[in-house]
Length: 376
Image (tube, rainbow, N blue to C red; front, side, top):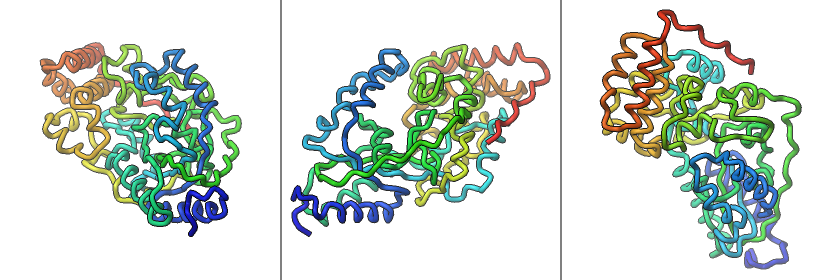
């Protein structure tokens, strides 16, 4: 192959096709090429930040200039090689959405977002993207690139949309007709002038199920997300006390929230993972609140080693579980579990445990029935 820096483009179409084939062999569900015009996404981000909807995610404002100009992350960047990676566990059953709704209805169950039940996706994507970059270098020789996961200040959803990997759903997540939304996205910024792919058309139509199902009304309109109300934000990114008014709506969700994805009709096409990395660890698809709340800090660190959950730390782990236990049906076992943490060294944990115990002191003897499962 001629020098990959030859700007005639004569061989870049063939190279792009090869990159997509190599990506599939590495476990990516789809690969596309995007140009780096993020001007529209930058304007949206500025409005979102000015509304204060980013909450405690100060890094969103701090790194806004980097998101607006990928060339600051990689001088000379011309394209983004974008990838999707499916994360439903390999052993997932065909009725997986019904099973998840069932766990949400069982208020003693600890519900962890599906994507976080296995290995930390940051590590998996970074490793696979690095291998893809090295394979490209074998073909074209040294070239400039930077591997990114969502830990880098990049407009990932926008670039993936431009690369034809899906469209932005009304819940703000990327959706694909053939894969739903149960996947991660990542990218390689590069100086290779690869031919960009065309975006796909949108297929949400008049559907508003994701908006209607949101427990905290965080999706305040199509494509408009107030992160301060989002359960994923509250249980993962939010570092301080969870607002009192929102605690009941968290239900038994202790890390993330999948409701807007579970109700989405397109997720009947969600694919199982190609890799074992996202297989469930530590029984997180069947654990109870009391079981997880009983873990010591050593157990938390050992059992979540290599997991995205480790990032929130033990204190916030207990905070989230305390809220969920406050929402659980009143029972001697639940009250005893909370009382055992009433004098925890962390003021954050103590406050949430005290709130939870107060819910049970005020609770009726018979718990209210669980809400009906929304139609999928």
